[in-house]
Amino acid sequence: MLSGDALASSLTSGGANWMVASVAAVLPILWAFTLSLHFARPYVLRFLQSLTLRFGGDVWWLSYVLTRDALLVITLVLSVIFLFPDVYLRGDGLGITAPLATVFLMWAALVKLLGDPDDKASHFQLQSILLLVASVLYIVPQIYGMEAADQGMSWTAALQSMTTVTRNGVDFSVPQPMAEPILFVALALIAISGGLVFVRFLLKLGTNEAGEASALAEG
Image (tube, rainbow, N blue to C red; front, side):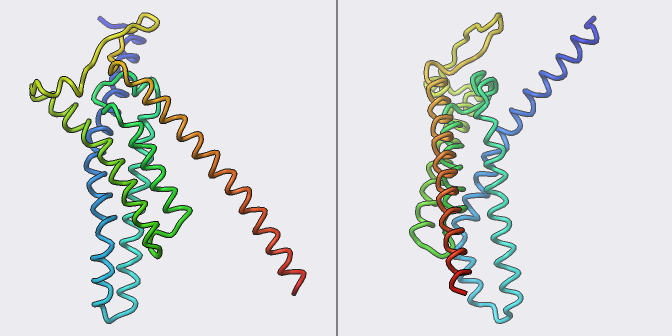
């Protein structure tokens, strides 16, 4: 019979593994909705032109934008779990390029945050490319590497390529030998991107303050 501490530890570990596996399994659905709403923008604009009531058009557009951006944020937040070394390096049910997918998704969100994809075609095209690359980096290894392997398809062994290593007396199933370099590259790209955004914020902050000061002096 298990002791109370052992039972609590087993429940905690099992619950954490179940949560990670559930997030990894539901993310392809969120990716599908995110991409569908993103590329539905031309249809939404054509539909708005057919509306004769301005209030109805505003409600339709605001509903579309809020749903689209909310799905993008939710997908990004859930994808952050792939940046945790203890979660990702175990490799249980996680696609090997999931951290890189998170990086490209973050870049797509930054284009939305710092640019204007709704009014500038170049920004919309850039965001579309980043979303497509991110979805491919996540969905392809997840569906054709992990999920298909559960059906006994031998050709997925090359994508899965798992091995077991021991760290501090604990066995981990790690995609060899690509997992750690992929994770470290993803973390480095996120750190660099965050640093550049912070520097840009500081530069813009100084510019805005100088502009407001000159406007007050002229006034």
